[in-house]
Image (tube, rainbow, N blue to C red; front, side):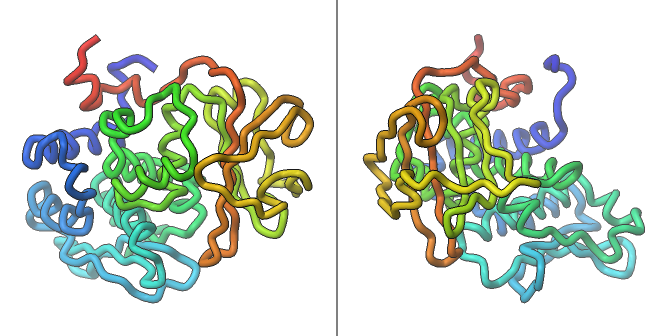
Length: 299
């Protein structure tokens, strides 16, 4: 992809990021994460004063984690809903995802008969970042807005293989869940690493970094049942956020791996992070667009 073909989600998120950096300083994350609820309301008034977002509210949303809804009358008035049962860290990404739909897709949502009164988003498209089309674009927008690369890379370099404890610190910096922070890190790292979410010894879903994927380190979960290795720290419930378990070849794959794992009782699932030795080929899709890091660090 050339630099003149820029993904719209990145363009819009980077535009807001540059504005926030100018107003609050490039060190703003040292003080607090993005107040995305306030941002959604105030920014919408600037770009669409006759059709803004009026409220961000929590409701019971069976089967959904968030929604972008609009009024029956024109000009449309908008609102963002999030499932009230979500913890604050998941709520931030949900609201940012729906804000992304507003910035990127409100015209489509308003006009397309598939979206009668709004767009409702489930866990798969938000928390797991496994959606396609406009759901994927809203995820890209949310991740770039809440965890911009130019700051994330200052916290963890692309060559580092961080522990879950270290990634948890970064997650708190951005006010997001540990899973959201790991998924964002996997987008730019040069490390061959893999995230696995599991329950009762079986993988629910998994995500590999691009270097890991290119070297054949991935797990299929969409149509296959993947049972975690019996010798894995996750199955043995040897949860350690800081040190990790070092496995020889043959436990996870036919090469050595370091495993970090964490149990979330709230969601009845385990988070596993695998690191493999040696770095893979460098791959950063967002480096193909001009972000704040590019602007302040000309190459």
